[in-house]
Structures are given as structure tokens and as C-alpha cells.
Length: 208
Image 1 (tube, one colour):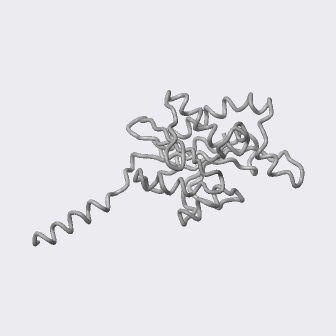
Image 2 (cartoon, rainbow, N blue to C red):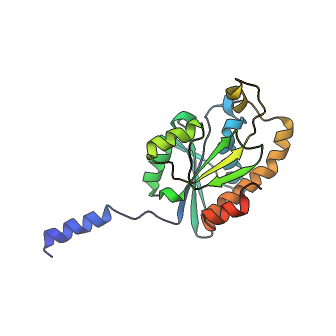
């Protein structure tokens, strides 16, 4: 191999670095702003805030979102709360996947789900957006719906035509009380996803 061919080969290899399979991007969907705090639609933010508190880490505002990270059992967990508002969540997900060199199968999207009873948790390796605008934009930006997602049930206790008011509404006092245990279970699920893998996590946590 000539010198020029070697140099070209060297830089080609450098520019095609394989994703770090011990690094995970955990994305909690929500809307920024005080008016959205503690609403059902912001459960993704709430779960990541709980996890950050348990790990004694803080979020830092960076490009397209608030970022924090911790290490657990040899894995690096990067937590992202997009600042793009729900309907443009995909832009932040794509940016941080690229920046941190994270594989698609190592991304976990956390969102609310009206079709699941309150507090029920469900992890899937792929699926449709199910009417969720955050997932819709992620599908478009990543050009696929084949990525892991963690749906947190918020129930459907609303009258016809009041869906938006419901998801953007605050948790009831009764729900707040029950959320404490559910948030802790969600934190366990995230760690399991990064260490035990998707299938084991689905088996251990779905519907529980």
C-alpha cells in the first residue's frame, strides 16, 4: 500500500468509528416552562428528575436540551430532557445521538401514554407513534420507528374532546401519592435497560 493510500485508509477508518455500545441515551419527553411542570405530558421529565436526584447529579442546559449523566456497572447513562418542546423532540434526540456516538438500539424514549392505565409501565423495542406528537417527530427525524420506548400510563379519565386538557393537566393528589413508588420503579427499569438488556427488562417490568 502506498503512502497516499495508507493516509486515506487511516482517515476513512477514523471517520467511521463504531458506536460506543456501553453508552446509553435516555430521553424523557416533555415541555419546558413552569406552566408544564408536574403535568401528565411531562412524565418523561419527571422520571429523569427523579433518577438524577437518586444519583446525586444535576442537569446542565446545553444545545437542544438539559443534559446529565452517570455511570452504573460499567455503562454510561446520558439523560436528556429536550428543550425543543414536545412536537420537535426528534431534533434533540438526533443531535445528541450523533454527538455522543450512540447506537439506535441504545436509545430509550420515555413518554406518557393515554392508552395505558395510570402507573402501568410498558417497554417495547419498536412501534408506532400511537398519536403521540413527540414520538411522531422522532420517527421523522430518525427515519424509523424501530427504537426502544418506555411508555408510562397516565390513563384516560377525561370526557370527549378534553384529551389535550387532560394530558396538560396536573396530577391529582391521589396520583401524586402513588407516583412516588412508580417513579422509583421507573428508575430501576432504566438501569435494567442499560445493564440487563431490552428483552430482560421487558420481561421484568412490563405491566408491573
